[in-house]
Image (cartoon, rainbow, N blue to C red):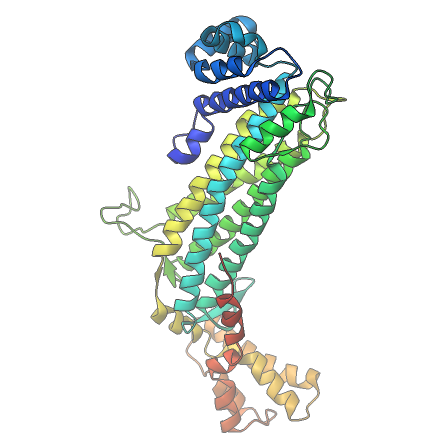
Length: 439
């Protein structure tokens, strides 16, 4: 069953109708290749008849499978009901995995193409918003604590580069999983010419797997799921930051809140980051599914089917969930509301403590030992910090340094130190790099 949260384009890839349509095309192409090769009895006319008559019904396949307990045989039986006499050439020399694995890889390319488009759009949004907010002053935080001034554009820019890397990973992974195998029971081409594999793969836009022992090796599928998990982790990291910025005590940014939306059944004032939380929750599913991909790599000898049942769940679920959460993240980032006035107020919230690093370096520049300078800077900083924690009025950090007899800094030097833009004199370099980031 396709999850209710799926988006239609991605959901269709994993519906039985699409899978069997791909199976049908592979079987027809194999017959056409055999006719062209001329090594068995199939004629060009019979191949044309197979192409014209090939059809299936999902309901009929299900009905047959209840007896055969074999989905490929059920499919082939249903196809034969439509094709008639030439159906004897369908699946000639092939094994079930030739059909199923090649089709599955094709489905994976269909899915990853959608995800590549998702990531490209997100990267473009983040780049645009980064350049729009390159002069929007805010405070940087490390360990959740105010650190130094920065600009909001750096956050968006960091996310843009993360999506650029995600795009690279997805593109490389697409090439890696775009393979097919039609090589027989243990991959030795015992009853089928390699030309058939080459022909079918070329028509589908795939490359022949150089050596598959009936199944296409599952390290490919593991990488596919691992890369999806990495993209989901990036989305989760961004959504977590949005949630943190939306906290009442911070409120520097906020995900869109639609007209008529309700935040809480009990508290009408609430505007909760529910969509960002949804992104985080669904990312956990995609990350967890990657483990199934790793477990599926080890099969008995040339093949077994312990991987098959699990793949039917995780490949569909991971691609559908990732497509969905990326769509939600796109909505969040494109419409995210920013509060620059609050950001500016938060810069000064710690009464100047965020300028401590520049005060330290300025004292070192006077010739003072770093350890001595650190003691002066920290001593005054802790005094301000204690007042803040106790919600007590008190002197600013600048004022304390100005009156400390051990702090040999002039008023002019202190003015330079306590200028937030002094931290950002070289920040243009990151935006110049970002301008060259293409999606």
